[in-house]
Image (cartoon, rainbow, N blue to C red; front, side, top):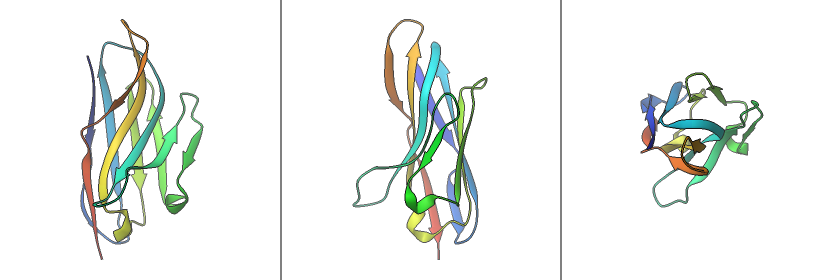
Length: 120
């Protein structure tokens, strides 16, 4: 059984910063790509940022220069540093990871989501 547990969401004023964390636990053999998605009310879930096992990153255009994704492979954890936050960044943020367990092939896993609210 694999779990992704997110933390770090909350309420912040525009221009502020938040750091999200997502820790994977369970019978993990390896973790491939990891990423963060978000879903605002009435909108589809979208990819915010992703990082490969080798550290290659990519970002959606609207967060480039403001958000930074990183990972600690020893801790099976991915982070999202969010700076210069804007009200349009308000959404539920979900952690995503492609994980191979000790007993099965690679599957995609999701966290439970953490709310990020940016006030004007």
